[in-house]
Length: 423
Image (cartoon, rainbow, N blue to C red):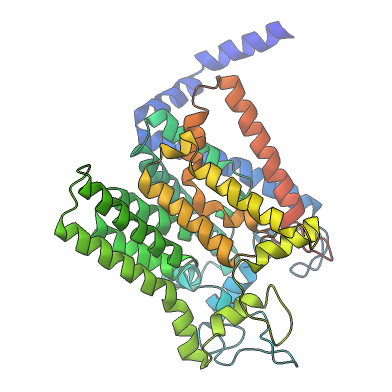
């Protein structure tokens, strides 16, 4: 058997196809990025087909075993599809009057989802004269954008690390448990693309070039307030370093960075303010978000309540605080670990600000692994830490991460009634 395998390997090495692959790989960094990312998408696509074969009847398909595109148009994709179809001023799009329960509490509705991604798909639909329906176009747009995202992530990682580490970090991100969502009709791919572009220019202190990316992010995914916090942190760090003679923080840069921080804070509030203007209700956005967490007319946002709630659920009411202490301690340990310090102040500030944002307002549940994706610079740190692993060990890592994708799809994406584990 070993002799057969050896002969097959030799034949592959000497084949024209293998030679073509090697030439393709050696052509440029861009080719290597695209080849790696194509491999990650092939794996995720295969796993989607596998998961679809296990899907039984669901609210989105009357019979089991849906086709590929049908299977990619479930869960939150339905909300984006409603926005795509109805826009502002209509139900079930962005309703002028918030839907409420008999007790006055706000029901789940589209205001929790920002319009950037469905607007992009709507524009492409107009360009194609409606020839491609949402169910096909939305996941296709996400898939195509994911290649642009891969290029930007590599360019961002390459600012801090050598090419091998940057490529390995991109590979790890592409095999992350929730990476299949990057080719579904979710806003994650577009949001991460805007985020990566913003970070890419901020790290180089080219603040004005970051503005369009941040504007796009503000209408695509929530969390811009954490970006504003990061920018204020950058201003303080650079000011102290200037005082200590470590950097030269010019007056022009002070005004640009400070102005961008304030502008980002405004962008973080723009969508809630817009929801208030359209609906006439000041808490339209927060009340809608809370509809996924609480029931009852007296529901209101309490900072860190979600973390204490999950702690009480896991450890009981007397020890729930220990879970919060553990989560905070883990975040602090990650931020100050040796490999994460290699990311530099800007990326560490972003991760810290985003973790703080999640700690204050997020409700930990099955979507946590997807929600953590904006902290993707950590994959560069992980790549640096594991850069000296043998090729065999790296393959074992990728096999393990592929298994985590299977577990995530089986638990979170495949619908089993009653289902309390959304992706």
